[in-house]
Image (cartoon, rainbow, N blue to C red; front, top):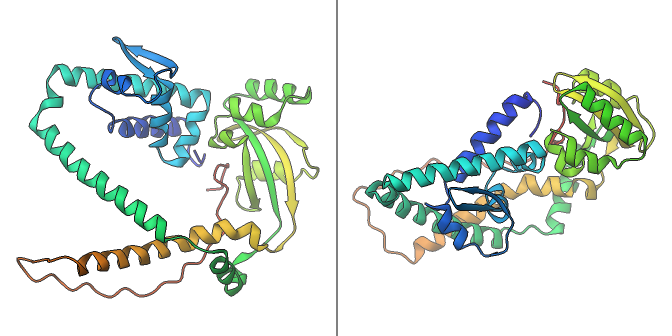
Length: 315
């Protein structure tokens, strides 16, 4: 999770999001376990005889927002996810005992949910299939908006974030003895960048909190490590990855950024065409004449240089 907020708040958001995501599960883990595709999945917990497997864990993680998925890869996040799955199972079991799973209200909501899932799945399939953007389109956008891709000097770095100075010192000692930075980041860091080996991507001055920025911009050799850097987010160990001068970013560097910027408009166009095509072949009758919507103004999307996905971003 982007650590603009404290770790405690992040943990609370993680727990809430996982519990909400888990509400889409089946009415009984005994049923879901018996229907799992992988009968040999590792059992990670048992609740009154109902098994929770590694397959259940991975399936639930996929339902979470991407920035929270990253938290599930940390030891703390993984345990919180398992605790949430256990709580979900306890709630499901008690609800079944109370007959909630057979109630009319639940049946009606499940029927409505099925409609939404069918519609969402259909739209996702159709819109994604027809919203492909060619390299030629991306290149054209790049050439027409070169001014949007100018940037000052930037640094790429990785970091390991922990809660205490003692933890940071122990990790720094391991690194000095030759331990792999990326592996330690994946297993020890409490930041969401842990899943990427601590990689923060490229960023310039003004993006990070002062203490972090001062430390990272004092590094100048590939692979060079900082000492322990304290910020409001905890204790960091930073690894210098590279530096690039100010100038216009090359097309290959911003290709994905451009695609992300123009994809929503492309998908909107495909969706509008799909709506019109479906209406052409249908007989639709309204009890009252539909209101005529105002015509929206065309907006050309312009990509901006995003902050790194996970970093001690300056508030």
